[in-house]
Image 1: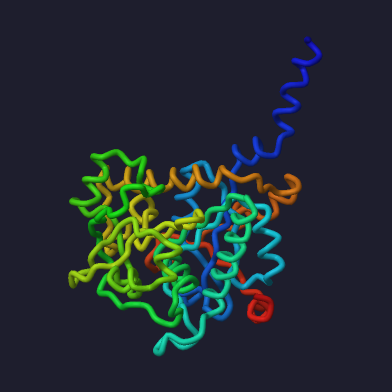
Image 2: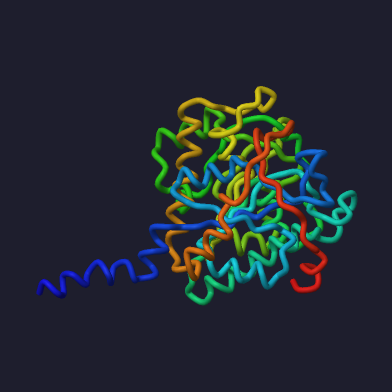
Length: 326
């Protein structure tokens, strides 16, 4: 009996799902750099450091996924991580933004990641994706019947309410009722977007309504209603037009962010929801050495005169390879 008891710790620490469950890693997709003239868009991609801290506060480590990685490298990383976050930012969704024509390389990469996640989930491999702001816009374009158009809003740099529509939402079902009331009445959600999807147009798009359930809507500064939260009906794909990381980690006075205690709790709830979701698959790196090579700890954040306090920059690869392979 003593011999068997001595084997229990060995078996417990040898099981992949135990290891993955306690040590989740999320791939954070970079986007073309618009954050600093010192890091031009033709040479760098980036994401805000607040996204890293947002995930870390939920017990998640981060691996950057530069948007211009070759498809095979993206797929190799996908099989080692436990979820993906597609962040917000300013680069274009299209090659021709004026006419909203032709997906940019960034949007193509989001589409590839979505396809990998759908394939994994269809094979019984639970794999979540969260898209924030620009990430919502990319994922909606990836799914929509008309992938060339988005709606335009007056919704830059303000905080607003979130009106809940889906009583069975996986995202918000565990949120305390007093916090839900606060979200609907006291404007905790920070918005900074030009594009998005009007609620009335969203519900008329058959592909969108087959794929997503609208969780919540919000209004821009002109009173126009847009989808501010949605989740996949069949797959753990989640999108928010608001920025939950901003309430927690962005403090520039020109950013009109709500930092009230309840607003912080609202954002912490979202982070913890993501933390629960990414603990539901068995993906892992092959070794500690392999894991260490990819983690965000290999990079240093840079303070910038931008929307964010700090950002991470990544030297561009040859992203034309992504166009060919995706």
